[in-house]
Length: 300
Image 1 (cartoon, rainbow, N blue to C red):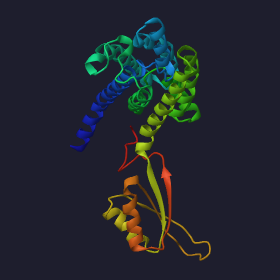
Image 2 (cartoon, rainbow, N blue to C red):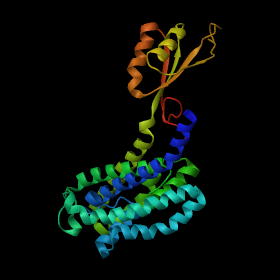
Image 3 (cartoon, rainbow, N blue to C red):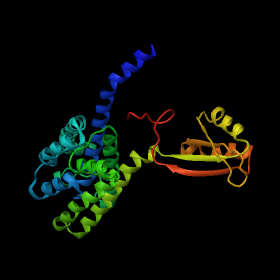
């Protein structure tokens, strides 16, 4: 029965993944249409180039994005694999249609009636912050499902694969080049807002990809190790591992408890250690990604 349920969930996983990709694209399109494009904020990449073309020549942003991404898909297929290329194709086509479609429907979402001024706010700073939180959240969701919204996202994924530079930071470096060009078109002030936009976007992506799956690693050395370990399992519902250790000065065996927890569980674990052994030696360090039982599945 369990095996059949696992098989059924496995078959549904691609459907869930593509649904998440589409929703991520929707968030990106909202950020672009309601905040960034109307306020001439060019947060780098293909969307930034397309925004410049829209305001200079009136070319629809979604159409421009679709055209620019064709060549980059060939690069994605060759370097990042067929599955990534297929998912990215779906994401980019969906995003292109959503960007142009939502822009036409923008007045219904509270934006102004003029095509070039349909943003929810004309406060450029607010548009920068909220627009890039939306686009960053959408892009992070797409990235987590082994896909890309096209453009410099693909180049960032390639950099991340071969250099291990975080995706958000890669995007920030690549998009900065586009922002410099936008400064010559919209002026120095708008270029400065675009730099803020790139920073907010990259930090949002890195936080959602890495930050939400972060944890704390505890190494606990105590004579009451058995009692502490038992409470970690019984009270917190977490697993723990005993490592073999030897005190250099005393030569005595010193079992070390290794446990990884969520940040919100930190006070409870400290309380357990304090109750059993106030003199315990405890080391706490950051864990930037956790996969496995009790946390996120390694296959995601």
